[in-house]
Structure formats: structure tokens, C-alpha cells
Amino acid sequence: MNLSELIKKNRSYRRFEESERITAEQLRKWIELARYTASGRNMQPLKFLGSVDPETNAGIFPFLAWAGYLTWWKGPEEGERPVAYIVVMHDKSLSETRYCDDGIVIQSILLGAVEDGYGGCIIGSFNKGRVAHLLQLPDHLEILWILALGKPAETVVIEDIKNNDVKYWRDEKGIHHVPKRKLDELIFSIK
Amino acid sequence: MNLSELIKKNRSYRRFEESERITAEQLRKWIELARYTASGRNMQPLKFLGSVDPETNAGIFPFLAWAGYLTWWKGPEEGERPVAYIVVMHDKSLSETRYCDDGIVIQSILLGAVEDGYGGCIIGSFNKGRVAHLLQLPDHLEILWILALGKPAETVVIEDIKNNDVKYWRDEKGIHHVPKRKLDELIFSIK
Image (cartoon, rainbow over all chains, first blue to last red):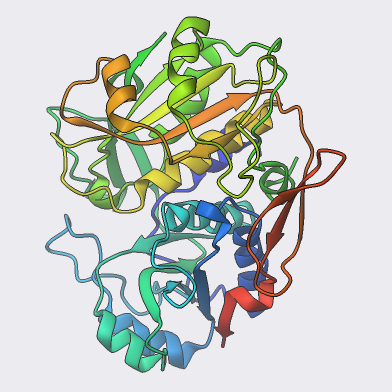
């Protein structure tokens, strides 16, 4: 798979085959990709917590909000929930700033998961305090994002945006549609 | 090249073979990768300006700061300067926030360049006002990062960090050394 194919296959998946487990070794492998990425001023202030433990996963799940535009959907049901999480944290004892390191490492980790036949979703809406308490995080680690991971059990398609409406939607067959701006709309100019 | 190889090859290159040009079509191809990436709330508020034009490039160059830790180095000399730039901008008319979209698109673009035999550097220190004026940007486009691109003309190696010293350095042979935290230091825990 070349990079373009990999990036296109890396969709935000929110429903998974819960019977397909992920191992701690697999998480380590994907997090290792983050080690080799660029970091602003090379500070490398991001830290990672992984979970493949069903009990820990069950503890994290209730604190997460899913797919803001699908207001009628409460999130994945039992049997289709994430089998692993990677919590991306900012170690404030190392650096006050993180520049754009978080996006860089997240894209690297998710592409790694997709290359291995898995996938995930970046969750930014969750109860920070409750998750930090559950995971017994020290104060200097601030949770930035939670990656929910598993073997995807849904189809996600990209389509050209219409009327500037960015809201993704799910059709009657359960297919998830994501409107994307056209390339010419993204490019201000090339000279 | 698998993803791990690609990510390891994607170093921050600051010296280039200036005789090796990049075309507008190549920039379009790499920016297209950004179109297929995740975006917070799917807002897709980032815009891109590309330049492969020697005159525009010469106009941008003086406003950039290079390699903060190499205080003795003034940046790439004539003959080893970037042959292309991608200016990553936030379109404030679309969304006030950008979440971690910028890191996601930057990693995707740079991996695309590396896959095609090029490379680049994320520059965050530059004269924003002067660059915006030079490029005649409207007020709603805020410059976030400038990617300097070309055919790399330097060797960059990664090594394990020592004494928590994150400063990269260049040896007497011109090889650029980048200390990276060990994987076990990045992982808070995996359960």
C-alpha cells in the first residue's frame, strides 16, 4: 500500500469488531512510530498511555463523546466498541508548548494501525478529569486526545462537499459519509 | 517502503540540492494527501499556498529562521536552499479552532514528499506579517507553518537522548544529529 492508499484508508472509524483483539505489543509498535517524528524544538513533550485491558477500556468508554453530528447516536454498542485506547498526553514538566506535535504523532500512530489492518478515531470530547482520575495520572500529564482503536466494522466514504456543509452523516445502510472540500478549495494558490 | 521506513526517512532536512526542482504538480499531489485526512468536527479550516517560483522563494527565504539550536549557522546558503514552499494557513472565516489538524496535514504532506524522494522542514519561526504581505494574503488567512522543501543534501541521524538534552547538533562532517527520547520514556504505561 503506498502512502496515498494508506491515508485514504485511514478514516475515522467508530464501530469495531470487538472480538478482534489488539495486543500491548501492537500498541508499542504504533507508538514507536511517534518516536521518529518531528517535534517542535525537538522537545518531545508528548507521552502515551495504552490500554488493551477490557476492564480499563470499560472504565474509559463512558467518559467519551462520539460523533457530534450524529446527535441521535449514543456511540458504539456492546460488541462494536474499541478494543484498545492510546491516550495522548502533554508532559508539562518537559515543555509548556507542544507546537503541532500532537497532530503529527496521531497521524503517524493511526497510519501504523491502518497499515496493520486496524483503524481508529481521534476523540477530543471526553471528561478529562474523570479519565485522568481513572488512569491515576500525575498532575503534570495533561490529556490531549484519546485514540479509540480496533478492527473497523463500518464503511466510511468520502464525497465532495456540497453547500459548504461539513456535517458527516450515516445512511440507511449504516454507511458513514464524510463531505470533504475539493482540492481547489484547499489551495489558495500555487505559483 | 513501508510506513515505518517512510517515517524514519522523514527527517527535518534544512539543506537541499537546489538544482533539483519541484513542480507545481508535485505540490498539488502532496497537498491532496491533506484532503483525505481527519479534521476536528470535519471543519477542514486549513488552506495552502505553494511556491515553486524562484523569485517568490527568494522573497520568502529572508523571513525564515533556521535551526534554533545551531546558533552559529545562518541557514542554508545559495545552492542548498529550498526549491519549494508550502505555506499552511488557518482560514478563520471557516472555523475559529483547528484542533490538531495542522500536525495531521503536515505529517501527511511531508511523508508524501519523502515517498517521492524529497524532504523538508517545518518552520515555525518566521516574520508572519512580512510573509503575509509578500504573499498578499487576505486577513482571514493566518499563517501557521511554512514547509521548506527540496531534494535533501544532508544526512540526518537519530540517536538516543542523553542527560535529557534535546538539542540537535551538527558534527565536523556536517552530519546532523537528533537526540530522541527512548520508547520506554514516551510510554507512561500500557495495560
